[in-house]
Length: 306
Image (cartoon, rainbow, N blue to C red; front, side):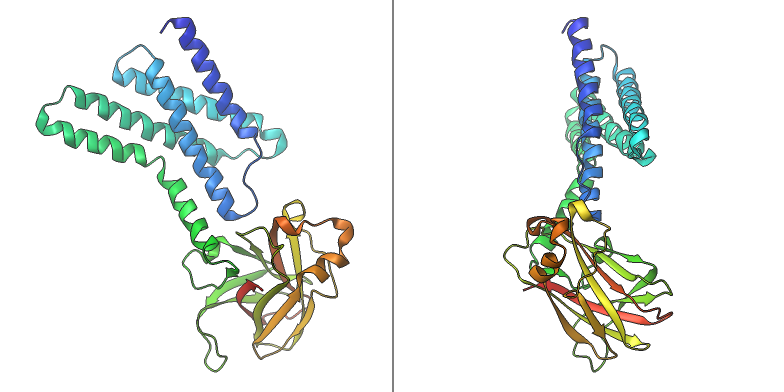
């Protein structure tokens, strides 16, 4: 391969890597962000591998150049995103980790060529394992996502070890509660310790987005300690994540007894029809206590679709 062709290949790879940072990301949930961040690792593993292959030098020099150039591309990409607020220095570490895994794995494989039969298999096995490290984060996040997709129409029952990736508190603190005696629950629930804020509760990111086959959003809720209070449920698609549109259909009262709450999805969306929320792209459920019940503990469990 001529020097000119190598330069063109390197430029092309650099452009693709930088452009990839500006493509629309998977940002609908923490799970999606995990998948997107994993792609950083894999993408720069590919970038480093291509650079490693086209640099005309020894293994050590090629490896250093590949990691340095891949890192430089990552830095430029993050700097270019600074005006949009999407820049994240952690992405550079992801880029470097992917590049490092690919280069080390390739270098070990090349070293195995001249090794004796006794060590060749061991080196090549090590090479494959190191290279696969670049793919492990993606496998991890896809595995979690797949496990929840298999549970649909259950959105969140708080019994899996990955539940924390699907919800976050809003003006509150949260904890996983074990089954309460006498309330008929069979598994864990989330406890939401309310604050004095007028909107205190949790936001839940969904995994399955198309709700067109369902008419009811249901879950169990009750106050563990504290007075009864008003709670509102908000349903958002990707374009309205973080928005809280109050509706009559999404309002209910919680007491000290766990009860099954059934929210009519279509009624909620009809009340906010001017927002044009797409039922085929639901990304977020927000459950908020509206009364200033400082210290009260709201118990929520078994969020699902009917």
